[in-house]
Image (cartoon, rainbow, N blue to C red; front, side, top):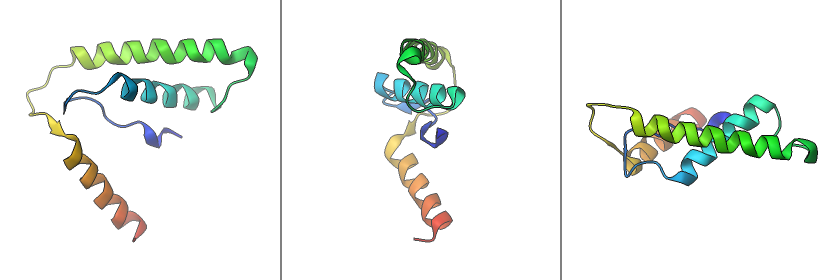
Length: 89
C-alpha cells in the first residue's frame, strides 16, 4: 500500500500539490487500514488527508539542504533499473 509514497524533498521542479496529496492519501490509507472508508468515516478520512497534505507541504517548504536538487527523470530511471534487477525482467 505505501509503495507509492516517494521522497518529495529536493527535486527540481518542487513536488506538486497532487504529489503531496497522493502521498498523504497513501499514508492515511496505511494507518487506517482501508483504501476506501465507510460512509460514516469518509469525512474524517478526507479531513485527515487534507491535514497531512498541508503539514507535508509545510515540511517540504521548510526543509533546508545543501545538496543540489535531484532530477525527476534521472531518479525514475534509477528506480526502473532497480526494479529490473529485482524482478529480472
